Length: 261
Image (cartoon, rainbow, N blue to C red; front, side, top):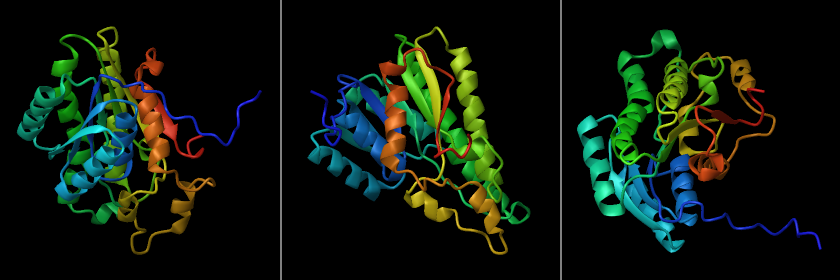
């Protein structure tokens, strides 16, 4: 008897007994990832800079029967990052999974972009990913074992007008991922990245066509399949974070409706 295609099989509990850290967990891809990992058995440390959003995420996870703890954390502050990761390790156990999801961005004419905005985008998207990874690696290497998944973007894989800062930060995330994958290959820690295209999240509202901008540039980076959902990106993150991808490191998985095909 063939299976009923309308029946959705619940995800396997690939993260039973594991501790996961998810940044940007207050909304969008971060929230969807925290929920996905918790439903699959992980104890999840939900990190975000906005406490109210975190409360909503933890409440949702509690209703679903997940084990989650909220931590207010600015990923650009090294001292706060180290303190937070130490608190997570003490409360939930040694981190087995890190998902660097926290990110910001905007469209702007590059010639008009203030330096402060450029610096802030790189600080959150790239430096924040570095600081979180650095802090967690101390636990993953002794004893060896762990999986890190970074959120890149199709903007880091192809030219995208009006997003020089965002593209530079995400291109940096991609090469940071590949460099670490080589550095720690054979040491029990895998590092991969997911590169979403347009995702229906609150961040999408930050990317408004700047005054005088050409819509043809937007059409170029828009899939005929429309926007993807946070859950679809979270599914890719969960795969790379799990042992199902045990022989995969340094990979960049595009979830973009064919934009970069």
